[in-house]
Amino acid sequence: MLIIGAMKSGTTKLIHDLDCIPEICLSARKETNFFIKAIKEDRLSQTNESSLLAKYQNGWPSLNPLKHQYALEVSTSYAKVPVQPMAAGLIRRVSESTSSSFKVIYIPRIPIDAVSPFYRHAFTSYLAWARNHRIAVLSHDILSRHLLAIYSYAKQLEKFSSWLSRESLLLINFSMFTQAPAEIAREVARFLGLDSCFEFEDSGVRHSSDARLESYRDIAEYTLPPDLANWKLSSSQRETIIHLLREDIKRLREVYEFDTSEWTEFN
Image (cartoon, rainbow, N blue to C red; front, side, top):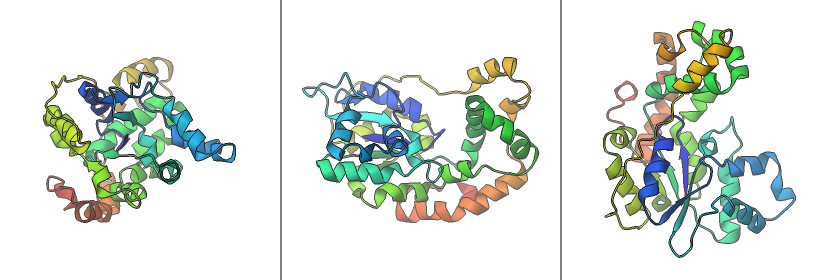
């Protein structure tokens, strides 16, 4: 089972919350990015799909077939086409060649709300990226094409929905997840055909760039904008996002029947 994103939409918390479901086994690493690495390293030229699946399964050393029904990982890079390779195509090949099944969870979030966390993450994770983009993004009304790709939700989902059945794809409302994480965990259990009467334990986990922001400020003030923690979109940047993503969000609503009624700027 895969949680493919979207980035900065609570995927870290969700995977840890789902650890309370007895039949689910979490991967040893949260983001294995296994299929992205396999594409970049051209592993299928060296092995077949069955061998690739076997290597993939090594990411769950604690998996107990007598207890667990699902192996779960989060790799948001699987939904970052074209900035990242199209992992969905390779996952499909492995699934069809080995008769293995995959289920996908995706958490859309109002794009404008995700942008500030996106930039804090990007600037504090990749200093070279920060050096190249700090002036362009923060001083001018330029937006990263990486960002616009990530938050083109319908476009990213198409890579999976083109071959997965609708019963194998679950979209989670980000607002509901933040307000009622226990109900979302039970919704996932029902989606997987598991007993939803387990005792929920809120993991309390949050993925934040704040700690990195403070540590990097000491060593790279020349790179990080001094007000990054409080940075917000300009009116021009907001208008650009709304204009460029409105049609994609319309498709998210109409094709995937996802409720965007609270996304007032896009309706």
